[in-house]
Amino acid sequence: MAQLLYLGLSFPAQPHKISASSSKPLKLVESTHGSKISISTTSKCSANRLLKTQKLNLEVSPHRAVSAVRLMRIEFGGAFADLLNEKGKGSGENEMAYVGRTLGFRTRELNDQDLRLVTDIVGGTIRWRRYLDHLISSISHDKDISSMEPLLLQILRVGSYEIVKLDMPHYAVVDENVRLAKVALRPGAGNMVNGILRKLAVLKKNESLPLPKVEGDDRAQARALATLYSHPVWMVRRWTKYLGQEEAIKLMIWNNSEPSFSLRANHARGFSRDDLVTQLNALMVPHKPSLHLDEFVRIKTGLQVVMHAGLLRKGLCSVQDESAGLVVSIVDPQPGEIIVDCCAAPGGKTLYMASLLCGQGMVFAVDINRGRLRILKETAKMHQVDGVITTIRADLRQLPDGKPLKCNKVLLDAPCSGLGVLSKIGKPGWSVSLQHVLHRS
Image 1 (cartoon, helix red, strand yellow):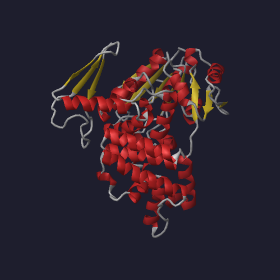
Image 2 (cartoon, one colour):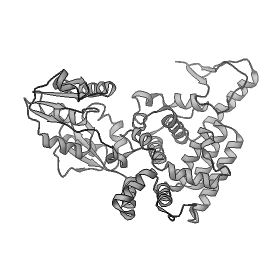
Image 3 (tube, one colour):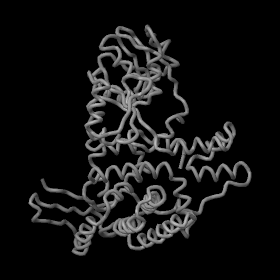
Image 4 (cartoon, rainbow, N blue to C red):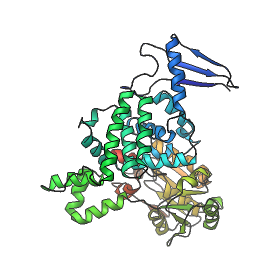
């Protein structure tokens, strides 16, 4: 099948790679055999530039190009990092199409190692953005980086994270990000990336990064701590007030450490924890059984491997905190019971309770959000528990008068601040919507 590549930028403030005067996107059509290329354009110069750009594309690091584009999509397009991580599902299958539309060129496809790096870099950059932005603005001549070109800023964030937090070889980080900036933007942008990242690498090597000092009044100290540990100022002030500065720092350090995840084997699919352990062993994913729940297994790394193996997509298991599982264990669903889950979406506890009913009984999943309930219904089919789940879109405060329900048990896990999942922001399997709410960076 012929490959069709449209060159054009999805975001403003980026120069067009082909021709500023051209009003139509440039198309490149390549035959199946790759022997014939026809270009539709009004300028021979534009065609030459296109071919030159194509040649350079193969020299651009794919994981850095994809990381920069993903960060753009998350910050400006409201995308979710966990959905972007799943190849072949949703927007993930069009990864290079997004790269092409945003940067004006494509790179080679991501391999598994590239994808792991993308996940690490994107998640880490989100978590440490306030800290990284402080370093960039301290080194840059223009201290107000908010007015910087969006793509240029994302490239600088990616490079800064790689140098400061991943300890990658500095020469490679600088060279690859400079090349990306030059090809995606212009030579001058590459020179700017070169200057900032080289200086940052020297400062990191000499252990002299320009970090704020924790001094002054309470507000000034909170701002410094918020930068050092990349948390919102209001959150630092609240935790310091109630816990003291020492404990608040410990909590922020814990939030920024590598979290562990739990996988729940789906009993409704006839998939036991032993089956899950067998699969994890075959995938060489380190794990250990939960100390509290029979269906749960803890993993520290390897969630991406589990996702790519299709265990989540097939409904054999799901990512679920043991804390949520413990709530369900208190409800203790029994076959034949009718249970009302009052604030059900996105449905983790609903699905777990439904699996324990063994096809007998009913879980009424009540939530006010239509979209989240739709996702719950789709997941219930995948987990083969849709026969015992009935979704009801309603405001719980009005439900008793409008549609009374008779049941054996009621679970009311009311919406809270969401701070309990803060440590997992930006990690695979977890969306970053809370990030925008908290303005963590």
